[in-house]
Amino acid sequence: MKDGTIDAIVSDHRPDDREHKVLEFGPAAFGIIGLETAFGVANTALKGRTTLRRTIERLTHGPRAVLGLPRVHIAEGNAANITLFDPEVDWTCTEADLVSKSHNTPFLGQRLTGRALGVVVGEVVRMVPAMKGVEA
Figure 1 (cartoon, rainbow, N blue to C red):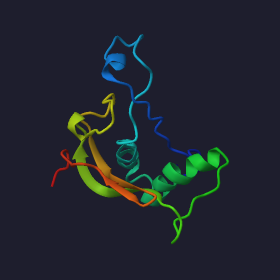
Figure 2: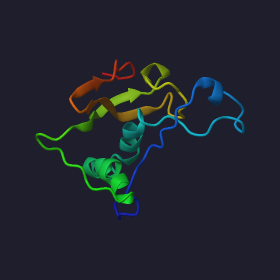
Figure 3: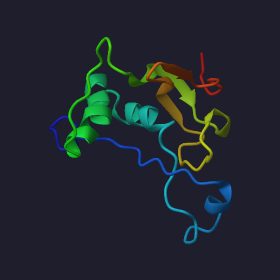
C-alpha cells in the first residue's frame, strides 16, 4: 500500500445459502460474504501500516480506477451512495452480526477494528440493525 503496489481492495462478496456452503470443501459453492466485514478486515490489517485515508481510497476509488470508471464525488444535489462507518469501534464478528443471507466467512470470532454502521443510497438511510459484537 505504501509504495502503490496495491491500488485496490475489493470484497468479492459471494453469499450463498447454507445448503450450498456447509459441505465438504470440494463440492461447496465458491466464495465468502464480504460486504459486512470488508472495511473492518482491511482497517485491522492495515492500521499502523498506512493512513485511514489511503485505506478508504483503496476501497472506494481504487476499484473504479482499475475498471476505468470515473471518480465519484460527494456534492450537494448529487444522489448519495455511501457507507457510514466508525474506524475506531472494536468488535468481534459473530453470526448474529451478519445480515447477509449467508454467514460463510472465515472472520467469525475475529476481533476487528472499524465497522460499517449503515449506508445511504439516494435518499434512503439504512443502519446496521444492532452492533452486538461491539465492546465498550
